[in-house]
Length: 119
Image (cartoon, rainbow, N blue to C red; front, side, top):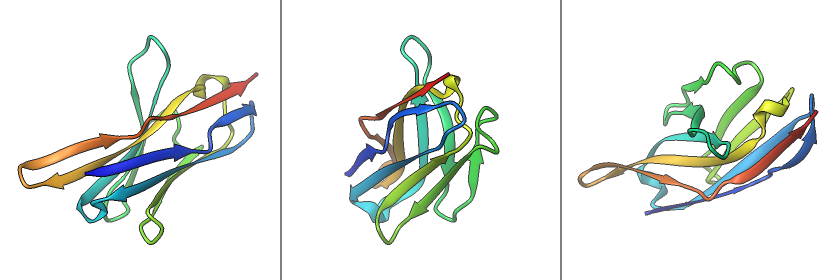
């Protein structure tokens, strides 16, 4: 199993920056890709950014050029650097891990952290 705990959320003004952290523990050697998602109440969860085990990254069009995902395996921490924040970035952000198991893969997800961007 893998445990994921997010931190770093909060209230920020539009145009500001925030860095989210996701501490992961447990069977960390089995982790392949890691991602950040966000969700607004009443809307579908959105995939924001992904980083693979070989450090390849991918971003949704809505955050490309403003957000940066990174992964520190030595400290078992995933990051999301968010710059030039907009009110529409307001959401609960959660991290997830795609993990190898004996039967295939399994996705673990943290509880999330609230990010609120004021106009």
